[in-house]
Length: 181
Image (cartoon, rainbow, N blue to C red; front, top):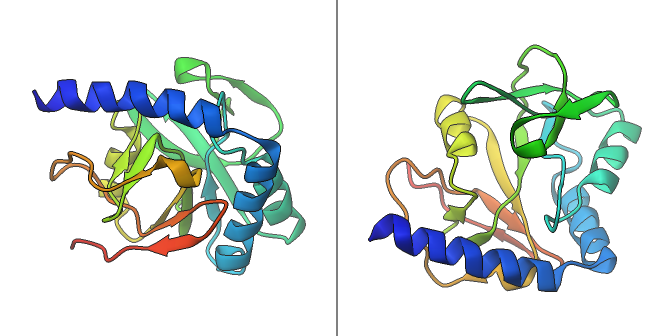
């Protein structure tokens, strides 16, 4: 029952996110993320946006122009690693662009994609568990979701293995969550 509920929510929020996608919202999310977190030290782990995800291209460019270290996701088997950003990308798991090579570097702040998030910081992803496993192995990393305001919902089903967000950046505001540790 639990997995079926999550699957239904994934379909609902994929459609909702697609209806919310706009360049203006993407710009506002990137600007707010930079304003709130852009001066942190320790590097940034930033997803490479695809399809209807909040676009990260401007965020990555801005961080690089500020001299910040930027890593992006690279899938190796069933493991997600944080590899140094490079402009030479190949199609990785699920057709998502990723560096062809690169050793893992742990960054202090991670900007992650999502389909939905709730008022406690629980994140609904695509169901592969890549980010949950990554954050379980790197609990010290600040977990920041990037999403449209309409992707926030009151409560999501979750398990102990689901790693909650520390913050959520939308086009309207930044929400911070108490980490359940």
